[in-house]
Image 1 (cartoon, one colour):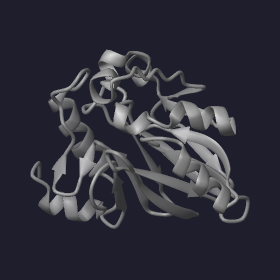
Image 2 (cartoon, helix red, strand yellow):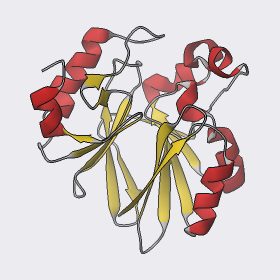
Image 3 (cartoon, helix red, strand yellow):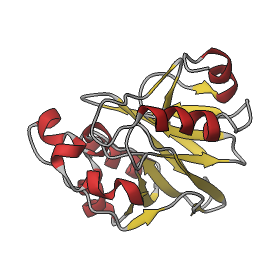
Image 4 (cartoon, helix red, strand yellow):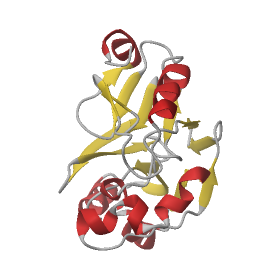
Length: 207
């Protein structure tokens, strides 16, 4: 599997393309901002964008979703408990953050343990409520990579003072689900720098 990291302006939210280098079947995770640069990456790398995966529905992670769907036909996937937030501009903060309402309708609602296949690659859905009720991480066990969205960051955790947030649930998600993964797993978060599960178990402020 191949990875392309793109910090999408204007918020520079971390978006990721993850794809099979043989079939070029791809997903994009949390495409914020506008679709223009995402389409450039797709064309330059000859990707077949099959899925738009959302770790959660906040405006800075979904700005390009609807246009990418329109341009590529890719399927939009998020955890089932995030559906209400994606469909409500007051919950996903899009009107406040961008001045316009962003409403996203998923093609498939996921549950904990679901598998998303991309060529030879597989991503497992890990439901991690806390930052939002339907927050989820995507885990490639074979590749040792976790896309953590805004659940787990280097040295800290996601906010839990926003609509549908729950601080206790967030800490439980991290300690019981993410910290159960192998220490060497690389964590690719929704903002800032990458880290590893082992580093966060030893150094994160919630340890």
